[in-house]
Length: 179
Image 1 (cartoon, helix red, strand yellow):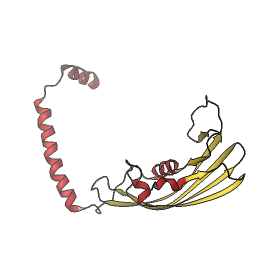
Image 2 (cartoon, one colour; image 1 turned 120 degrees about the horizontal axis):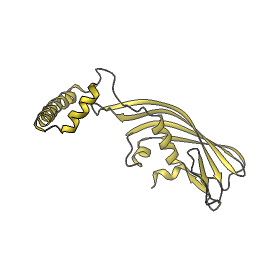
Image 3 (cartoon, rainbow, N blue to C red; image 1 turned 90 degrees about the vertical axis):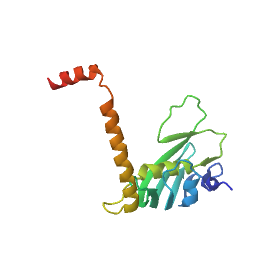
Image 4 (cartoon, rainbow, N blue to C red; image 1 turned 30 degrees about the vertical axis):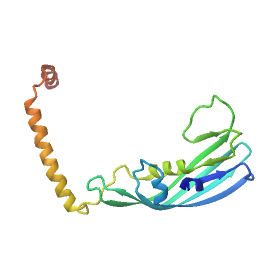
């Protein structure tokens, strides 16, 4: 069974006006996206569709919590998410339409749209750029192993730098910099 089939909005039989769709986002949703940095979550997504004859305006209200890996110790880390986004779906058969982040063009031959890709994109836009535990909350055992490998790697890098000949052009550039 396709997990993402639940996120198909059939707009062809939809009456003009406002409609609401409620979704509960869990681990299965994130697993459907192969390269997702988000490992788990418990989010409520309310999608309000305002349909007219020529377009649909979808407002996405996202609230809940996601689970990611800590950038330092790779342990589980939970982040709260609360965000609102808007996507416009414009009905058009024009071949020369320019691409736009906020407007998605839908052909008249289509009768439904899968909004799963928009939901995952909006969740990813809402997550923090850096995912780190607070100071002192990282897994100490893992940090000790990482520290051991990092020290060895740093020593190897320093040795290789000392062994390499420095290109004389860099020395000339350093002289210019010091002037």
